[in-house]
Length: 278
Image (tube, rainbow, N blue to C red; front, side, top):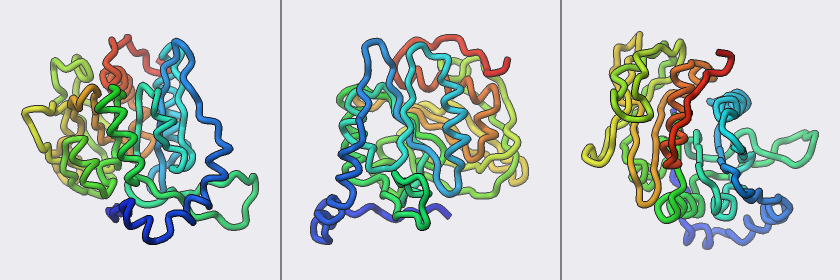
């Protein structure tokens, strides 16, 4: 079951020794060069992968899907301490696929380790402040993938417009009822993902949120909302729930939805997509 433990507040952190924690992580963070966007570049920041979700395959397929974009650079965050306001300050798009808790596996600058260091926490107040500010006030796009809905922070749920519903059995899933006229799903018909973890959400405000598609669990016959989108201030949010395994990112129809969603979230025209290997 996903960890829904809440992150400590700034006040709690200060009372429990945040200064010591900052001293422990600042030297490494200070050495990290924050990539700045070059002229004409599209800067994409991605935070994906944890114990349940294979980071290496997610990174490989997301890079492959987005590689068709001209001058697109995808920066994968290897430790949550590096998901900073500075990193996001000129990002065009943020992609997250992380539930609450700590990084797993924890990042280390050493090439060989005998014991893993403790992982950074994600979805801290600082993370939320930076993400919300860049989406709402600057117009950065945000793609909330799969387990992001289980951040454990009601602030995240409110911002992306949903209440999460947990279903855990891994099984074949049919993606259906795709919105016939929305740019993310227009012209894409029903398709099949051979293995995925079907989550569900309750949309908080149907008047401001568009349901993009639903899913049907083959074994359990559950029917669930699996894709949605909404405007949030100057920015846009897209939620896509498929993505537990690499299988989802290998399906041509889902690759195209992912590609279109990235461009819609960035408020750009959507170029034609050619599935890798097609």
